[in-house]
Image (cartoon, rainbow, N blue to C red; front, side, top):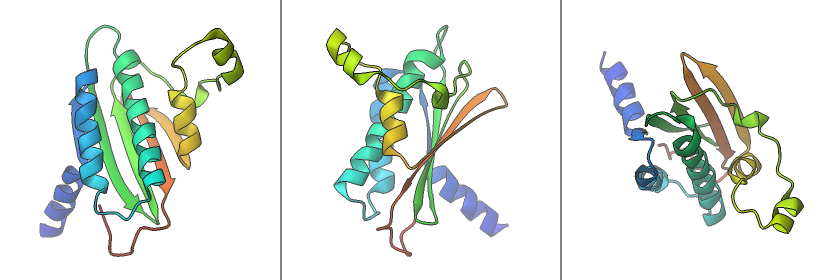
Length: 154
């Protein structure tokens, strides 16, 4: 029973639920920094993860809940020299893997800003999986991190 309580405590420490509001993105950023600070990540790896995660959360804020605000749940764990990031929302169904790659040259020609978040996230992360389950959008991204020490854990 004590082992189960310990596992739940560890799981709870590595997760956060925020409102789907732009002001809450700073809480996600702080949670990410606090959770990853003990790992020996390169600057490049850390900022790739941060950009990917924040872009996906911002998309949820902007598009998942068109009628009213909802919540975003985020969980982080490491396994087999990979960092996993699970993002859940209860908004409208949307599979980001199906978003077409942008025509970057056309965007530049048109002076268009925005529209690169999902594309960048897919490029920067090593894994990008989606499923819809129990009225939830569930996105699991992972980043392979070779520098994680065997003793490090989240």
